[in-house]
Length: 269
Image (cartoon, rainbow, N blue to C red; front, side, top):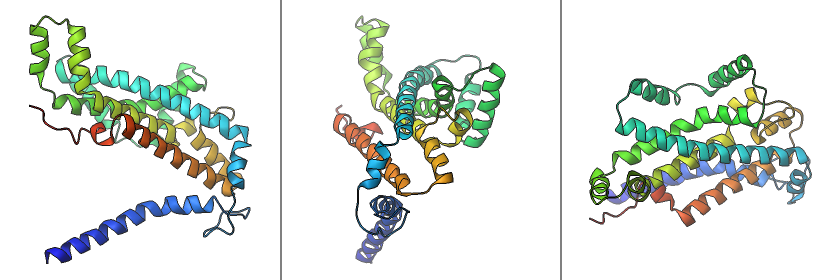
């Protein structure tokens, strides 16, 4: 019975993996078709559509905008997430419960509602569409991730190490730099990583805060597909998947995906 359970469990895991990988595989295969329309299985093999992507300056400029805003969102979210997480975890101040509720509710509010609200708020503030307003809109999505991950990292932090460092005469900044920050480094990098992916991949909120001259890559793809659905779209999708894979490989190389989420750490005590 145990052997049968293992076989059934392995088969179920394989089916789930196939279900998750199949859409990506179809997209990659469709991007190689020699036809001028999207088809699967592909009819012929060609890299023509990848060359088409790099010959369209609008896609390159949208990629640069998305990558730049995503990097800025990751950096700002990491700093704000660290400060907010430390404040919520260690201090009692008026509005602390409200702040936690707002950060938690951000995950439950539909992004289309956030997009409409941000559009109206920017209009009332007289803020024209720009990379700055796009960054501000994405921070509404990304900061809660960073704060929550930092709070999770701080929950497992042993304060005795900080007290020992302070008792030995280390000033508060050195205690923070050499004790606190390394303890939450994985959570902080994880928050920045989630912020980057969320910002780079966002479509719903960006639709409300961009213009015809200022479009992120997902918005550009969305608008392009309304008038022309050729294998250029699947080629861009494949490149975005490759971009995400490269990001994960880089994180695994320099940080470790397991450490990123607090797993795989041995107890050295």
